[in-house]
Structures are given as C-alpha cells and as structure tokens.
Image (cartoon, rainbow over all chains, first blue to last red):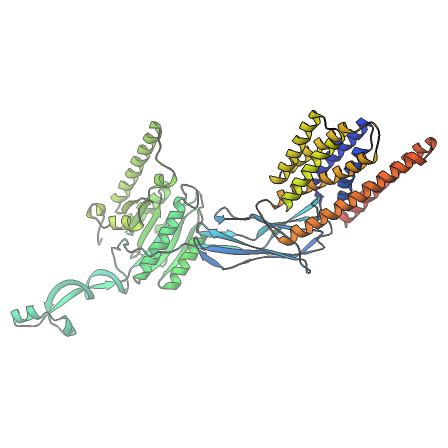
Length: 425
Length: 171
C-alpha cells in the first residue's frame, strides 16, 4: 500500500514556507522556531506503507429484505501494522436510503480488526451490490494517508412488499380444477347456472325442493364449475419513465408483486416474464413458494434496452399456453411492447394490459402552454395506440399511479372496456 | 473538548503577536487571525486554518522587536504549538465530519497531538538554546563552516529518510 501526503501535510508545508519567508525577510530566527513543532510532528509520523489488509468481508443482517425494511451491513477488515486510525467508507447503491454517518473512523484492536455496522433501507426493488468499500489508513496525526479499494462478494436483495390485490383481471378461459374462476361448464361450483332434472350422481343437497314439489319430480340446482387460471405477468423492461425509486418500472414491479400475490391467493398458477432486450421467464406455479420465486425474479429484473426483439408468439406451448391469461404491465414508452401485445392477441392469446400513465409518474403537469400542448398530443397518441390494441382484442385500461391498482383492475370489468374483445373465442 | 481546545489554540494564535506589539492595526489583524482559526476548527475548514496560521506567522514576524529576547523565543515556540493544534484539529474535524467516530479514536488522536506538541516544544527549545549558545560562543570565523555543516547534515538526513521510504515502497 503506497501512502501519499494528506491535505494536512500540504497545508503544513504552506505554513512552514510562510514561516521561512517571514524569518528570512525579517532576518530573525523566531519564525523558524514557530515552524519547528509542525516539522517535528511531520517527521515523527509513521507512514502506513507497510500496512496490509489481510482479510475483508461484508456481512448482511438478512439475505433478502422487503422494500422499506432496514438492512444492516457490517463492514469488517483485518489490517496488519496499521499506524493509526482506519477509515471505513462504503460504496452504497443509490437505491439504498441511508441516514446518519457516511463513514466511520475506527481504531484497530489487538488483532488488527476493525468493523462498522451500517443500517440502510432498501427504497426500491432490486439486487444491489454492497461488497465494495474503501479503507483509508492514516498515521496518528493524519499527515500521511493510504487508500485501498476492497471488493467482496456481497449482494443485498430487496424484495417487493406484496399486498395481495383483491380485484384482479379475470381470465377468459379457466384452466385446471379447484380454483375460484367460474367456467362455462356446469359442475360443482357455487355460482347458480340452471335447474335440471335429478340424475344419477347428483347430490341430495342440491335438490331444489320448491320446484320438485310443484313439478312432482326431483329437480336439482346446477352451478358453474369453478376452476383455476394460468396467469402470466408480462413486465415491460424495454424502457422506464422517471427516476428510481419512483419510476414507472418500480410501479410495475410493485404491481406485479401485488397481482401475483392476489392470483396465488385464489389458487391460480402464476408465472412471470420480463420482456425487453432480454427475455426472462419464471415458470408458472402456485403456492407460497411460487410467490417467493416471483418476488426474487422481480428483484433481478432490470431495464434492458436492445434492438433485438423476441417474438413471443413463437414460444413453445409449455412456456406460453393459449389458455394463459397474459397480464401486461407497461408505461407504453416503447412501441415494441404494444406491438407484441397486439400480435399475441391476434394469435388468440388472452391479453390484458394495465397501461401506466407515465406522465403522472414523472412530474407535476406542465405549466407552459407548449408543455400542455405536448402533453395533450402525447395523450392522444397514447389513446390511439390503446384503441389499436383494443381493436386487436387486448383488454386495456389506463392505470394512474395516484390510484390503487384495484381501481384499474375493476375498470377492466366495465362493459365499455370490453369493447371489441372476443370473449370465449 | 476538541472544539474547546481549538478555540483556545486560536486565542493563543491571536494573543501572541499582541504581547509583542499592541498597535491598533496589529490588534485588528490578530483578532482576524484568531477568528479565522476558531472558525476553521468550529466548521472543520483546514484551508481556513492554514490561512489563519500563515496570517499569525506574518503578524508575529511584523511584531518582532529589534533584538532577540527570551520572551520572543518562548512566544515563537508557543505560536508553533498553537499552529500545530489549530491545523491538526481542523483537519481531524474535517475527517470526522458526517462520520461515526469511535471514542477510542478521539482519545488516541488527542494523546498523539499532545505528544507531538510536547516533542515540538522540546525540539524548538533545544534548537533555540543551541542557536543562542552558538551565537554567543562561536567565533565569527567558525560560524559559516558550522552553518554549512548543519545544512549538509539536515540535507543528508532528509535524503536518507527519502531513500529509506522509497526502499520500503519498492519492497
């Protein structure tokens, strides 16, 4: 480790030079004497040249923490032959909220060990590198300083805080049995379908006694079968609007977590696909383990701009089944995402788009006349794109970040939003 | 404690030139230097501390009386210690700014500063005594060779220190 003179050494040199000049100009020895304590302190300082860092590590309080929860990182190092204090200065990602001290000054113990525990708060979903920090070694008075960048392997995973959405986009086609979505088939559900004559296999508790007495024969109430659905959350990773942690991408990540928790709570099978420069896929599944898998996949999601676009309609049936409800989350900042949704719908996929109002993500409405005009034009273009998607059979709704996700999902159930959709096609 | 020590050092820095010459202009300058030194420690500004120290040295030089005396020598040593304290504390506070500083660090730093100040004091007094005795005892003919020898010794010491450190770096 190579030491260099610190700022204090240069400032001391300036003062010593001033003393020498004053003494020379006045022809007196006293100013020289005034510089002696500074010179003595400089020459007795022990340079941290021989200091070596024998071990360094970063230990996290938890492997993965929910968004907004505190996360403690302990930076530790073992330094040999340190002449003075050791400064620990971590390099923290911008998405970690930190309050309090930004660095620490520590005195090595008998074994040369120094450590500092710092608490941060994950402000956005993601995987963050926490293993990099700087060690600055100084002599006792700080005339010499040596710096070393330490890189260890330590990543903090900040997971979305999933609040199960109560209102969810409904699938057009139900899938496997034992779910909560009424299907067109008559079976053992709870939603009333019709009344039919009693037959072999009908349960006694389903007998409609008033009708049976009037008709003089046994009649039973029949109900629609209830089934689960296969849901694929399609995340737009082409582009993001706004600055993290309040960008459109963050809102989409949180919405995806809420939707996944909501669907999984009603026993549906949920998968996740990140569609952007890279195509990443989490296999559909159900249960708490699947929710954890989706939350971890969301924490790895990144915006990846690329010119190469995969054609989702060519994915194998095992990856993207025709019975799957595709719930897309996007600010529609990149037209390629909308184009792909239209293409999927034309190929018979059940596609629902929650289109995030990107203009409400970024800033207050523009004040100038030109700004307002530009915003209106942008909204017209966006509405035109949404209308085009609706023509292709995509169920779309505008989703404002100021309103809960459930409001947008409930709007999808209104008749005017069904538009030209092809139900049960 | 650190701030209080810094303020006292700033006060010393301002007071020393006034002991030698209490001219109104000197009073203004000394007050300015003391204020700058105290501000430098209070707000952790090492650059301001260096400016205050330089100002203090220049004013001290301007306030020196015609003849060298024991008082002026003692004041020069005191000024040196005050400069060291002001500079060091301003830099230490700068390093500790927005940081989590262990109490042990402050204790050891204060001890090291006290040691350095003491050693500086002793060295300055020894140098003053040596210079004074040399000025009194050495005949005029010997003074130039002795001064040259001292200069050569100092240069050799500096060179040795420099080469020894370079050797360590290489190793």
